[in-house]
Length: 325
Ligand code: SF4
Image (cartoon, rainbow, N blue to C red; front, side, top):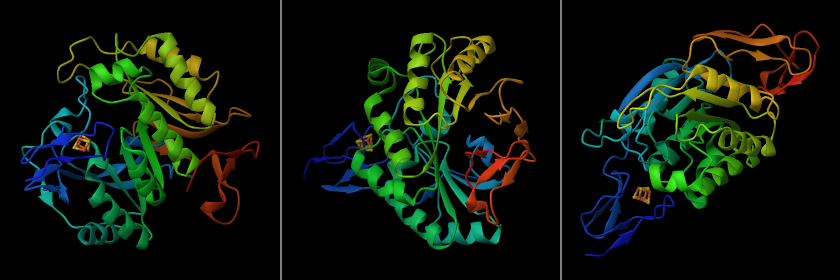
């Protein structure tokens, strides 16, 4: 019986015979690396794409969302910990062909791999994403981005859009509190963007953990350094799992978002009432997309050409605006 090492994410877990990795998903069975949860789905739902959140990708559309067991991070404030930290109940097997058939029967044009951390199920993702692409269905990834460069290079070419959690902007916090690493996440964001994937970034603003002006401003500058057109979602935390700090103050959240607007064109707040949820034309201020909960009014967007693939422009001033169809 051999010891193994998993290189899927930068944790690079040593796996003695019979052991599971930190994610609880990848196992050394008799000296072979196995994924006993291949194709096991823990959640299956129809969501508005805005819930991912993706605000600039096919706005107003619905998406078939798949969830999986486990996560390779250990965020003590996880807002979804029952799914992400539980591998005792791995879910129900659903092979890629059945998922594609389901998506087609229900008229979905996109599938999201979401809820916990899909990338630790990379073998299944590669199979399902290839089948979806073959069927003309787009793949959307909602991920913590903490994965090896090699895995990213395999998965990103199959991905149409991604929302990546940038959980903080401190290597020490990633390593000591979350069990991850900032540089790997930044590399994933950059690889996705440079690979032509539609990228949006989300940061859950957790009081006392990542909410200093300096840290949030540095995160905003990093995103803007790739492109000022990348949407950034600043979400309010609520006490959950092992974290009891009071919820994010909406005033703090909105102030951080207003500062980020100095370098980014599209900054949104989430998990609070009101806040910044509409998209305004950066040139003339026309409301391009108005969002009230998950009700979405896209009348401010018009097509640039005959096809959605030609892109969009503002209905008032005609400036091109960065939305993907
Ligand atoms: S994917 Fe899982 S087993 Fe592999 S290195 Fe990461 S945490 Fe460890």
